[in-house]
Length: 146
Image (cartoon, one colour):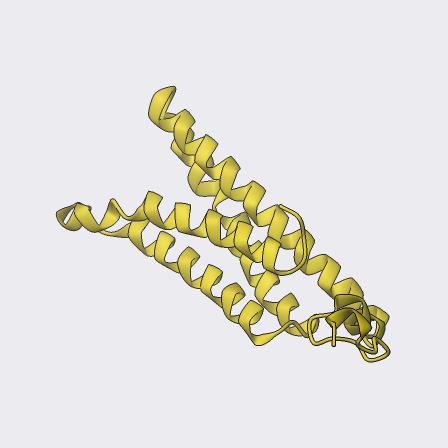
């Protein structure tokens, strides 16, 4: 018997349209907000990299902009984590959201380390790369097209 002749009256496990029809409008909106926040976080990371590039290659006074702007990705990552629960997302997406916040904590810690252990501070841009690719992955896994 072919798979084409299977009765399709019951939704399949991964069927998103059947899943979203059972959700309240509030949860559906929260999922949309989650995806928007994840995209905003990716844009914030790109802006941070640009600001770091300005400070490195143009004018070192631009570090103030880089450090000042760092508050926005922290706030956005917290909102992503909270929204993942409000949107009733699967546990895997909630854990990814928590992981992104954890990476941001590592970024902040690596930026504040004393110069005596500067080799650990060198992980700062590595963590930023992990954060960016993790955010893009989160957008893709949550149903958005990145």
